[in-house]
Image (cartoon, rainbow, N blue to C red; front, side):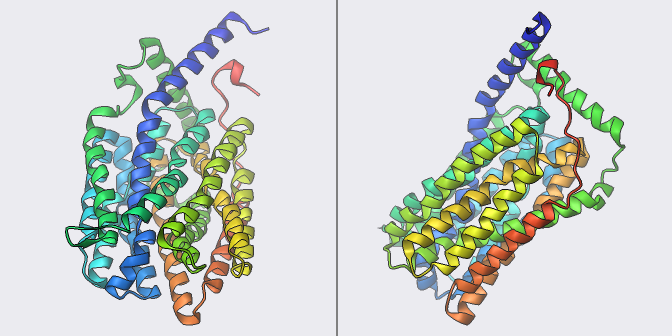
Amino acid sequence: METPSNARFGDIASTTTARITRRIMPFLICLFIVAFVDRVNVGLAKLEMATALGFDSEVFGFGAGIFFFGYFLFEIPGSYLVEVWSARKWLARIIVSWGIVCVLTGFIQNANHFYIARFLLGVAEAGFFPGVIVYLSHWFRYQDRAKAVAMFMAAVPVANIIASPISGLILGVNWLGYAGWRWVFILEGIPAVILGIATLFYLTDRPKDADWLAPEQRDWISGELEKEKEARRNSKRQSLWRTVADPKVILLTLVYFFAVTSAYGFNFWLPTIVKSFGFSNFETSLISSLPYVAGLLMMLVIGWSSDRSRERRWHTALPLVAVCVGLLFGALATSNSVLAVGMFCIACAGLYSYLPAFWAIPGTFLTEAAAAVSIGFINSVGNLGGFFGPYIVGYLDKRTGSFYFGIIYLSFSALVAAILIMLVRHSTPIPAAGKNDSA
């Protein structure tokens, strides 16, 4: 039978975690939806933009991917500032900046403009994702973190589910003499500016500053997070900048590189592949949203399962194997649109469901600023795969006249990521602080 002390612990743990979740997660999810829409809406805009500006597959692939070089340059400083300065101020700067750049993308006139706009969008958005991952570690215990990351990252498939049909509708307009593809960027960039300003007033940096928590809730979550930090400090002293040389960090970076190669190669080219089956722009936008429904559902399931078992590697590897299988058979089934889309749904389920468990791994062996730097390093270097995926698919399509070889390349990248994650040496999960959370 549960003792009174355990009952009290369980009550404060559940009520505090629920209150934090209700307060910050919907807003963060909304921010990430807008971020991802502004990052990948170029895939649907391309259906009209490429023809209007005379872009071939290689030009589009290079422009779509160059975003990640700008992203790479400022990623680590951004995540570090969230740890040592102010999350809400830094995130607000990021969000307003990328909204402005997205709007300006609607006025490009040639390939060079396209490259510059995409590069600057990467610079503007750098630090947002790893910054939020670090920010979540300020609010959620280890045993709750994968669920929190899963909820946050659910924004990615949700963004595609929402944005695809909306962008498809916008493509059909012609207002004030501007084509629909231009309005895709303009109308989808404005919400970021508004939400960036709201971030300054809504987010709270740390629990000690949260007047929306009861005093005992603030004390409890602050104490729990401090115990985690002490446990990691006592197990191994960490050097801030030597952290990135840790073999586990290097392996995680490689895993993320190959996984992101698959993810963005798929994201940016899916509308074009679907359109090649003979659908209209709006039909393409609707069908392109279907794989992301599968991705959303499986992300939540895998995140819940990973936290329940406190197992991370297999919960990362098996979804990546699903990506490999889905893309491989999707490539083989391109003559059958229904079967191909079904296989792409399997691939997309894997592309998003590996993320919650993956991003919980650095917190098993790193703490505080070292964790922030490592997360920024993994995300910035790994995201360079976001250049190679779209570019190589476009390059191979231009050279062969088919997406087949490009999709096979993305499938192989996912398989490499699945193998590499199993080489990450197992880390003992941080034990729960409360007795009723013990195994």
